[in-house]
Length: 59
Image (tube, rainbow, N blue to C red):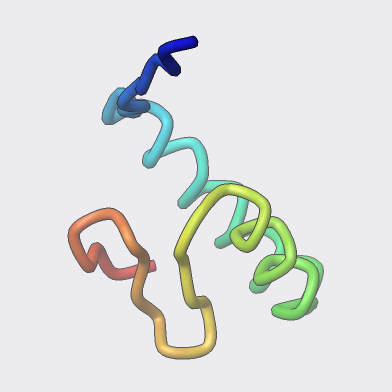
């Protein structure tokens, strides 16, 4: 049986929304661990170093 491979890509709006959520969680709620947990669920992101796996965009 052949297995199909898929490539997942996100729209720029996804990253804008994600950045907005992370900024709110870290700034307003003062909970960088929760923001990092959210990012861990979405991909290879690292809030501690202020970088994200999507092209190294600053958070």
